[in-house]
Image (cartoon, rainbow, N blue to C red; front, side, top):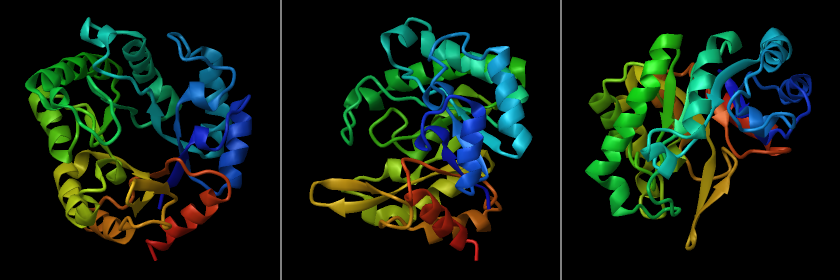
Length: 280
């Protein structure tokens, strides 16, 4: 079982060597790497992938057996800059695609976000035909770079974003014809106070829909309260991880990376142990 973590949940480091020590100490196999969040000496700007940074990552992370399951380059596909044809976020994403092979990474990942981002409230415009057409346009542009660099794009759905359901995630791929697109499944992203009791059906449906395009799982948990769903570490909430693992195993996908999200401190090892227990 491949269990990893978002690197910046371990802290912010002055070198890849320090990050590697933290990953190994936590007993983890892989990371999701957003370089400007994980490293204090890297800024979110075009050209961030310097030869020195790439070599540092190769030597200290990849060279020590730590795999990079995902390079995170998240940006809002519906910002004014993106609607006009591309901003800094898209440029960094393209540059990240170009260095994937050097990093031994699987894909560059992002959410699409939307015209309006209000937690747990999706605006009609995010569900409009205009929104899907904009998403298709951005993806086709990124697909061109992915084809040239022999790399992959990964998208993640969220209940209050344009890709508000697993069906809309799959629709984006079908309408764009993007064969370089893979899917990140963060099941809690699709859950709300209104639908969390139907999570089993969501799990079954999504694993079936995503099929071979399922790249990795984001792992967090939730506790339902009258005020909404409160975040929790995996195994400490109400999410049905046992069903998720069972379904993945039946689909031949139990080897996909499980990436801890928002888990810090002493909760990291207990979350890892809980996830490992699923395979026993």
